[in-house]
Image 1 (cartoon, rainbow over the protein chains, first blue to last red):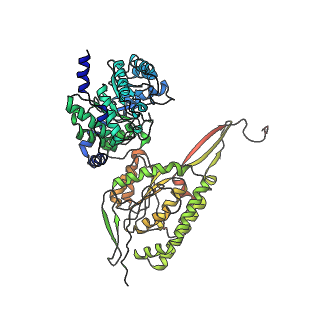
Image 2 (cartoon, rainbow over the protein chains, first blue to last red):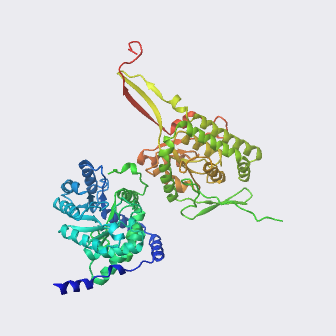
Image 3 (tube, one colour):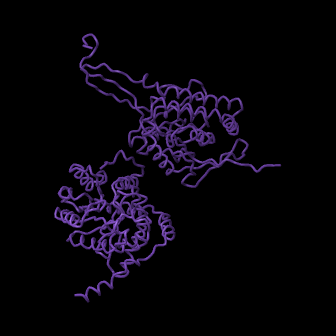
Length: 308
Length: 293
């Protein structure tokens, strides 16, 4: 037993020595992604692909069953004027709303994701976090979005963060686990890289940038840093990890830039909602407006699209 | 000692900024003798799109301002224009006007702005009404701005045509996108500089230069534009605007006046781009005779 454990730990990276990130290099790379011109048929497909990758999200203290039902309806009926649109990937809600959401989307491909572990701060004891997670799973959540303990991470207690993620992963059962790093609180890209590596090694199925409650939320810089962590892990082990930038992506143009970045960093295997998601709520309408512009040739107005 | 000539770069005006056209294209404008006056931006449909986004963003704040404050700001435009009187006169002369006519045009433009500044907090009192109804309701109709208005400025006028069409629209609380005269565009962009230095929030007026042929269709089909005012003379072009506008039932107006006449201005040009809102409010009694108070 002792031997086995040792062998396992040798496979792991030394968490104090994760790769450092060249910030200027990242920024230059990002600029390249933003200069790609996506037109015509590729734009059409890109917009629809992005729409299909959205986790439509409502995470407010004022959420009610009515609000969640409304959002679930929107998830399945994005813009009924255009018949051939797919639904979004998932709806993302608080644990208390999982059952309601699950019931609403039961006849569709839309999954239900639930945040957990005392979202968004993560400042709660372990047993509370585990119960939070198990409750969401028992209510029918297909995916769990957990937050890491940023305070502990910044104190250098990487093992604590690792163990916590591993324990939540176990509590998830069949549900896929997305680990939110809350990069807006991690201060440096080096930290983002380290937190990504910890999450991946501890068993994350997805790594996710932000809760959406802290500014800055998702940026292309942190997303690229996280994509590189996924790439290195894939090159080393052959295991795919998903990516979810969340918060701050509100325009179709930005979404296309992200898709370009994913394609050029990880390859087209990741260009499906099984491996890439956008955590957003207002992005959907901008994508819809752009899709309708492509279909009709005329510029659209938000007045003709449902709010939620 | 001879100085190096400092020539002005004419750009477009979107959201309170002076960007170049997104398309990177330009067209040359020359005077009657063939001397180059300037390279104007040849705006594209994407510039129209950007201008509409800016206008929609500005509309909320502008429409909710106190009417009196809108009047003050319009008056400030007049003040700023007054200060730049000589610049506009020389630009008009460069574009083929005589000195006397140019002076008349600029003075008239300033006066017209003051005229519409005065109307800002008065038109509701004149246009709105209390309506007699046969039930215990207080029933009244008031005017509210329609939203984002596209304006095609007349081609044969550099300054006064544009001013005459823009002022009533913003006096009513709308935001607008203006396509400047294709032939005589210089004053439109200089006027944008006046707007930019006169407390008009960015995005309330956006001015593009380019061809009507290219921009009219985008302007009139855009779903986020609520009305179009056409100041040109081409009946076919106007028909095309009307037909395009049907996609979201925009209001379309043809304004053809001799703008250099001092009475080519009125309250009803403000009313064109306003919508009537009627409200029913319950009351205990109608009329005063049997009223208990």
